[in-house]
Image (tube, rainbow, N blue to C red; front, side, top):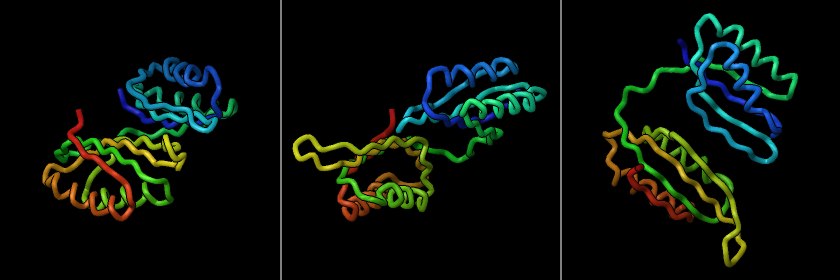
Length: 172
């Protein structure tokens, strides 16, 4: 059995996931893991499936047929897991919303070899002032050779420049 990674995007509608799951099951596939969400009227997801090698072509064709129903699916073979050693760190950030926060934070993380495992962001009004606040929660895979206090120092310097508050802690 081979693993494939699928990305799915479509206008949100009932039964969307069921149609993708049906294609996978009809080709002998097994749904292993996924992250899916609805945002701004669109539904998007990424999932990993296990499929017999001889069923790849048929599954890909069936998934492409979903385009006629407005469901776009991109298929890629799964890649090898990195062989580095990581420590999992949770990053929480909040600050006044402005363009470039994600770019600046991820640029710093990439420069230090930190892998972004997951990221959830939103913008919401502050309770008392109604000023827009940007919130981010990220799971980071930090190389074990990178000292956490060094990463914390770099992030705090950037946080001061961005005028945001951030918190790093060991992931549970």
